[in-house]
Amino acid sequence: MNKSVGELLALKELQALHKVREPGKTITKLVELGILIRGQGCYSISKSFLNALKEAGIRVDEL
Image 1 (spheres, rainbow, N blue to C red):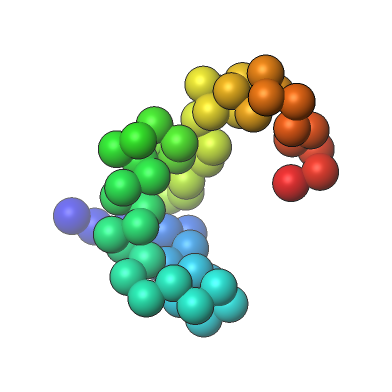
Image 2: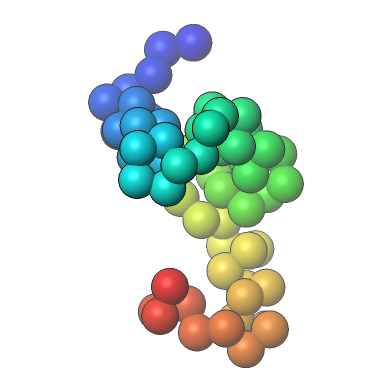
């Protein structure tokens, strides 16, 4: 599977800035759980997860 520059940067950022040891596995799991959606060269938070946050009273604009 080809990876875009945006996807590679996401992996590097998780590893370097947030100390995630296996960022690829982490992103894959978040996609499987429906938290993230893999777009064209990027990852986005899914609408269903955003709605769940809002229903829980979490202000998304503060994240």
